[in-house]
Image 1 (tube, rainbow, N blue to C red):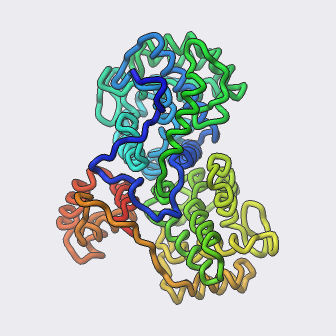
Image 2: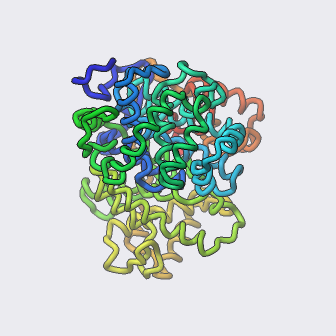
Length: 534
């Protein structure tokens, strides 16, 4: 059993696999705690949930884990881990959902609303039937979530849980069909916590316990269902009183009895996460997984904004704030269904409202990013326009700070230079013409636009990895770069002037080296490790 005097998330020992804690410019590094909060926020938006869903679930998961430990219920692998590990898994549970948004969009039409409906459906039979159709989506989600945990430098047992989030007690889950005690215990704690939080919020506590009971001995073990049934009412009352507010998984609780996680454990979780740092680029890369054509988009906006700031004479601190804001500017995109970006789709009023609110949700992320409040606020201006026609504030003229004007121009520049459905990428000259039209119409600031168009394109390279780190050949990098932006093997072969079979050979080699089996996970890992630039 974990020593209660030790931090819940001890700084892991160095492993042979490189992690995000070993690379990236120092100025872009943020505490892992902030990265976890940001990813929890992105996950809630992507799943169509209230923005406190993950923090509430984390609080409940810690209570379930603590109560199970107190009762000696060693159900599942690593059952003796401290409750804070369950809280951390709960916060990161939906971190892989941007990666499988394309699959859910095909399956459900609305990947955001569809997942919300899926999570709130109390019928165990319907949920089981739907789960049977989600094998590929579950694999993508778990592989990406596991990579995120590894890149954040979290302990191996948390990474293991992230890779098996949708396993079930009866062995019918995904992605590996593990059964019973083969499954990490925190998977059951987090699944129960998530179901209790959502079902109680949507249907009431009594109905929630009935729905959970229908899943007993199938999704999770009966002994844990009985434990939750005994404590659910008190836990939900505490949640409604704000017990989850304060720390990563809630440190304001006054509980000290059975089924509670001691106050010092919540503080230990925050302290241990804060002792680690990670490149903010990791959060940006996860955001950009939502659609293949967005791969690397936030990095390019961040680079363009920083370079334009240098042209305009901003000091180093202001340039770095612009860069971080560029990395964050897409957080709100998680709230918008992928179908809205589909070629040829007519946007209705509801669609336009979702797009208008994207920067609003980015601004709201500031409440979860204690070290990046100024950057998140700046990022929320990305869609404002000088004539007041932008979103979400409809700010105009002097109400838009100069750094925000630069960020808006950088995002506009990168957008027209990026191929997307129905709009091929413009070359440099055509992009400058397009930016000039925006300036002439009064939408972009002329100085900001000129600085963005004239800035020298440069990329700050990540420091080299230690001997034994993963390396890709030039051809493997080319092939992965084409697949990362959503091209098929045949399309990539045509662009690169090689056969589809050769593309497949190089792609399989790259996947083996990266220890990934899906496009999304390989893209995330290669981008974060500096092996791939797009």
